[in-house]
Image 1: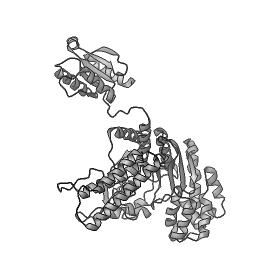
Image 2: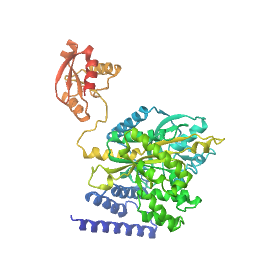
Image 3: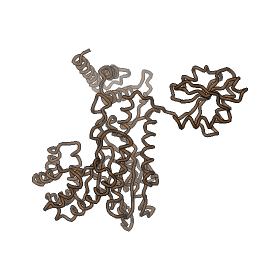
Length: 532
C-alpha cells in the first residue's frame, strides 16, 4: 500500500470516528460496542501497519482504551482500562537489568567520591516546596488534604535535602540520593521525559574554599557519562552571579532578573529570535536590553573566556559578575588538574531556571547521540545531568536563617535509560535478566530429591542456583532453559555420579563436561564464575 493511499484511509477513519462521536453526543443515547471504538481500532491498526512512531501509536491506543472504558461491555458492566497512568511506564526484566547496571555504575562513582546516602519522604508539606522552582512550580503534584496537612509530591531531591539539613541542624555532609520524583509535565516517553522518574543526586554541604567542591561535582558527572558510553558529551558551565551582572549591565530591571533568566534558559530548545520575542513581548523587556543580552549569550569558551570577560569594561565593574568570573577562573584551574577541560565549556547562555541557584551552574548534554534507530527523534535526548551551587536554600528552612553552603548535581537517569534501551534493541547481544550461576539438573528419572538437596547445599554456600520445578524433566529441556536464560553452568547428577560422589559440571557455551568432586563443587563454580 502506498503512503498516499494509507494517508487517505487514515483520514477516512478519523472522519468516521468524528461523525460517530457527534451523532452520539447529539442523540444522548447510551451506545455499547459502537463503530466509534471500531473506527479508533482501525486507526491504531493502520498506524502499526505504517510503522508509525511509538508515541503516535501509544496516543491513539490510549484513546481506544478510553473509548472502551466509556462504552462499557454488552452486558452493561463498566470496562476497566488496563494501562499505566499518563507519563508512567512498566519495566520488563530486560529493561530492569539495564537500569540496575546503570544504577550500579552511578552508585559506585558516588561511593568512590566518599558520599553517604540518605532517604526522605516521597511527599512533603506543600509549603516546603512552594516558591523554590520559579515558573516550574506549576508542575508540582498537589495531594488532597488528608488529616489537616497540605501535601505535595516531591519535585526533586534537592529541596527535601535542604529541609533535611535544616531540620537536623547538619552543616557538613557529602551525600547521594537515588529516588523517584514527580512532575506534572507533558511527557515525551521516547525522549525519557516522564511524570514519575528517578533522579540520582550527589551533593556536598559545608563551608569550604571556593570552587573545590564544585569542581568535584563536575568531575563526578564526567566519570559517570564516560563510563556509561552514551556518546560524545559536553558539560556547560556558567554562574548565576555572572548572569545577574550581565542582566544588570544590559539594563534589565532588578524585578525582572528571574523571569528573564527563565527565558534565557530556553535557548537550548529555541532560537535566539524566539527567546528575544518572549523577553520583549511577554516579559516586557526593552528591545535594546534584549539585544545587549544577545551579544553576551552567544559567547562560549573556557579559562580564556573568563579572562576576556574580566577585561570587559562593563562586566568588570559589576561586583557580582566580578566574583563569578574570578571563581570561574579557579574552577577551570581545578578542572585542568582533573584533566577534563576538553569536555567542559564556559557557556554564557546556560541559565537553569530554578530559583534557588546562587553561584556556579552546569549542565551535561549529549552533542552526538548514538544513532541506534532510523528515527533521529528517538535518540535526541539533550540534557542528561545538571546542577549547581545553592548557598541560600537551607537558610530558607532554618528558623534562625542559618545558611549551609551547598553544591550538587543530578543525573537525569530516565534519559540515559532511553538511550541504552534503544542501543540494546539494536544490538544482537543477549541481556541476562538473572544472575544464576548454575542449574542443578538430572539425566535420569526419580532424582528430584537429590536435585533439591544439591540445590540447597549450593544456596547455603552462597551460590546462585536454580532447579526446574518438575519431578522428571528431560535433560534437553534443562539445557535449553540454560541457553535461553544465559545460565553458564549445569551441575548434572545421575545414579553413577551419586555412587562416585561427583557431579558432572557442564559449560553450556562450549558443551565441555568434567567430573567434579561433590566436596570441591562450590569452589569450582566460584572459580569458573570469576573467569567468565
